[in-house]
Amino acid sequence: MSNSRQKIYLFIHVIWSVDNRLPLLTKPVRTVMFSHLQKHAEERGIKIIAVNGVEDHIHCLLQMHPAQNLVQIVKSIKGESSRWLNETKLIADPFEWQEEYAALSVSPSGLKQVTEYIHKQEEHHKTKTLDNELEVFEKMQF
Image (tube, rainbow, N blue to C red):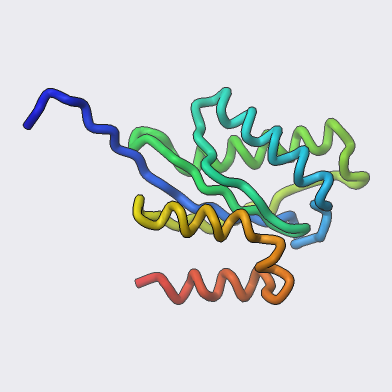
């Protein structure tokens, strides 16, 4: 084995929704919030490859080191974003995320496809609901 260091990463597609799936994330709110999420994550050593969503939920593709903890990463991103949304008053009512979330591992060979899927969320959800989407993911489980 050579002396070169191997870089090992885990790639996780995470989906979470607004509490009670309320359609609170308008396009202008999402645009500003996604920028804030990227900055916050980067400051904490969290790599967000792609982020997008619609009015009631968002998708994130994360690149993690094996030593990082998914639960802590998601808690950090969700907690910071809800705190920030409430402080900035971009949404009139108090904002909360639903506690649950879905997380799916992604192989390196699937990164391009998942990234494109995330970037096309608005188009995708013209015909499909979050429940439709989650059903597909549930069928993929062994």
